[in-house]
Image (cartoon, rainbow, N blue to C red; front, side):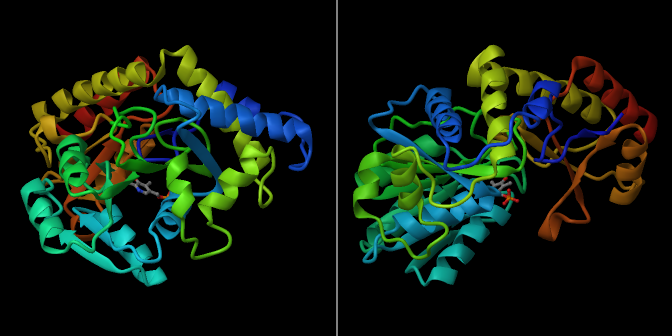
Length: 357
Ligand SMILES: *Cc1c(COP(=O)(O)O)cnc(C)c1O
């Protein structure tokens, strides 16, 4: 039996998603592929009950970063300026993407353990009125913090600033306030909360935002994907097998009660394990109310380094995840995405107890 993946993607697959990849070989220029692609785009719109006339899904072949890069490099206009909010690795990555393309950039940097100070963002937007767009991570996977979007979107609406969201590790599970008209795009991927396989990523984008794009590269031109896909085509070869997997993963999500049901399932799994760990004296990095349902980070106990904990849990059939950057040696992280049963949770609790007590 292969190990249960508790890293933040790729996830442990269900059998039905795995088997979907064995479907017929397809040419990406044939109608059979076009209907698979259209079905996925429709189902992605339905995850958050969006309107197909207002929103479009641009599907591309690549990891989550490809979708984030497509969003940033296409949607900030030539005369625009981006404010990038950093409170972890992924916010800092968006700043790097903007720098790579020479997009005029302002940064709002916070401690990795700190929430976004919305009043500071408001001041920053007031002081630099050339800022047109703001980029923010929804679930900052570095720490497990779920950044509060509503207050931020309010401030941006008031300042007439459009928001580009990295929803890579939240789309499919966490609530996302798509009703804000200044939230114009959300980048995400198949292989996190949607339980598909790595290889397909996508951007949900407001159709009217595609009227004023400024593509800065060829392969990640988001508009070219949406335009081609609206016409049953694709600019380049797509990863057909991962499309099959995503389509089946979306069917599975729907069968299991959709995004709200997934959110409560993750919450339940997470609180069970958090209770076990805190009972063993392990300290969480953040208060429960600040955490996503997707991933929590914990301080390593003084008597057990990461390698020892990782190896003991791997021997018991679970892959946990290390901290990143400044947290590489002090934290471990556990994600609750993927095909995980209540039996698995009980075995995981027992493995933690055996290793740490
Ligand atoms: C996983 C992740 C990404 C993308 O990472 P890839 O390795 O390119 O899939 C981007 N942003 C966040 C918040 C993530 O968790």
